[in-house]
Length: 249
Image (cartoon, rainbow, N blue to C red; front, top):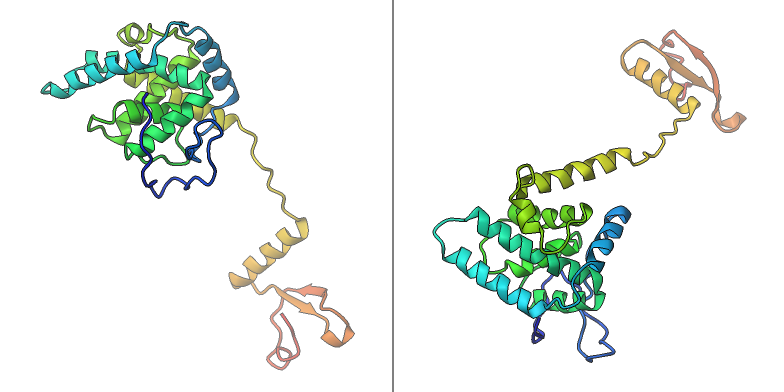
C-alpha cells in the first residue's frame, strides 16, 4: 500500500497529537475494536500459516481488477463477490499479524475519505478500504466483514475461502449469520449484575403503593422536637381532619 499525503481528518477521528518515531509523520489515533479472546487466538493461529512469499501489493492489484470487473457488470455476480471476499481474507490476516501495517491502513482510509468509528473492528476497516470503489450498503460491508471473522474462527486456510464459500451451507449469508448467532450466545452466557434490594426499602415501597391505591396505609412519625423523624407505628385508619395538621408524612 502506497503512502498517502495527509489531509484534514474527519470529525470521527481524533486529530493526531504526536509524530511517528520512524517516518516523522502524524499517526492516526484510531484503533480497531479488539476481538474476543478466543476469536483473537484463532485469528493469530491462522495468520501464522500465511505464506511467507505473500505480496500485499500484488493481492491489492488483483482485488482492484476483480472490483473493476464487478463494477462494469450489469448486475452483481455472486461468484465474483465470493472471489473478492476470498482475496481480501489473506489481507485481513496479514494486517492482523503486523500491527505496524495497521497504521498505514488507517492513514490510507482517512486520506480516502472513509469515516472510521470507534466500534469498527479490523475486518470492517479492511473491507471498507478494499471495496471503497463499490457503491455498497453498510449491511453488505458488515456481512463481508463477518465472513472474514468467521472464516478465521473456523481456521480456514488462506486461499481456500473462495472455494469454501461455494459449498452448500457456507454461503456469505450463512457465514455471517453463524457469527451473529455465536456473538448472541456469548452475550447470553455473560454473568449479569445481581440486583440488590433492601428489605426495609421494599416494604416501604409496597406500603406507599397501597396508600396510593387508596387503601389508607398511613405512617405516623414523631415530631421534630423529639429528634429525627422515625416510624412510630403503622395504622390502618385515616386520621381525623384536626389530626392531619400535626401529622408529618
